[in-house]
Image (cartoon, each protein chain N blue to C red):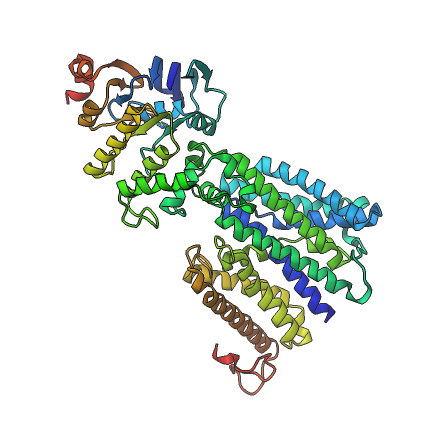
Length: 248
Length: 345
Ligand SMILES: Nc1ncnc2c1ncn2[C@@H]1O[C@H](COP(=O)(O)OP(=O)(O)OP(=O)(O)O)[C@@H](O)[C@H]1O
Ligand SMILES: [Mg+2]
């Protein structure tokens, strides 16, 4: 699944923080999106998922020869198409246990409406097995209870996105707040899903080693515009990128 | 005895209202401060349809259902997209509008003169009130069971998720507005229909029944009992309305000069109790995480606290109204309405 943005801009009180002439995301397995703080990376992903209303421009989704504009959709409709984003800042459902949180996210709407109150649906064995597998792979301090630390909430946020089986997963700084070995496990899981052809991924990261070792394509964003994009090697060698970002 | 059944029936109505509010606020996070608006709308609509249009109970009830569905849907559509404070103000405004229209639209509601008589359905002679009471019991037990099942169902988890973080929920593909609309409207219609069922209980309606203290009583009961617990509404109504109104007003001998101040005293004590509970147990008597085996002891301690508060309130008041000339600050004036042994609680 691929998203194409054309003439996409976002301004806050007249100040333009995002101005993408033409770019597409999700066509290369795992892609990186890098750039200095305040470059507009999170704003871009927000506009792509319709959580942030773009000022002008269009975003189109291409999936198996069908192409449609996202601009008339609400954020939940974009999510139902399979475009799901993890969050840079910690977001959580504090009154749901880890398991309930994952169940809630993965249960399709028709099994979650008012009828489920009266005729309790049979336990979804497949989903429970999937949750078991995830929880044995990613140990929580209290797997039957709640996500306790910030790190656990961040991890749960990512797992929740993965368990809804996205076609395009957008990850906003997944390593921030996570221990190194968990980050590596997360990236391994993501890579497996990408290799299996289940999804494509766009990752925002300041940890460049993670970008170089996981991504096959990288977008460089600075002051709201994409200044360069290409393979990791090409980006590493690029002068503009070096000056604006890595040269510091 | 008739008065006792009336009180118990009213308690059931409040219980229904608190359960509906639990769904709206406890589960969905929508602060509806217009409870009396929905209840009053249903009650007055029932009276107008029956008295002015001379419709039968059943016909009037069907019409009230249709009307309350339309109005609840409109209110939901207006308030659910707003931020929480705005929702709160908008629902208060709705209740105020309902109360005002009842006074001003005399051609329909008879204004301050009042409207009646609304007769019971299912009239079987002497037992009518008891039969009606049994119907109310069945209804409220049904509502409580619905809430208990809702808590265990996938829908319940979805509602809690929306309350916790609506935007995150939407980003996972959940149509949060639609879900909120469905349950908000459903619970509001329930409040209207509880109003419709209150009409025969009161028989004669006057605008001074449509006052904010109804809303407060329901809110206080829910928050006291535990707004997020499936049994919180029920426990809350029993420890407030049950203990105060039924035990004190009905069984504790209150002297005639006190009877007039009891309703005010009641609200005052509810408020005091609410503050104490919010300070010492912010989640209410039943926290969302209270383990099932502890529920009963929490309920007992809740009832005792509430009874003690009510008792000491009445005592203090009695002492103020009838100060004993000989000893100035005696804790036990002989007019005290007391039950044996309750001094130790
Ligand atoms: N709601 C808002 N109102 C005004 N300005 C905003 C708002 N949200 C973001 N901005 C501005 O837009 C610019 C881009 O922000 P954004 O969060 O997209 O940056 P980023 O590239 O994700 O940075 P970081 O790497 O620090 O996460 C910043 O200058 C920020 O101050
Ligand atoms: Mg960011």
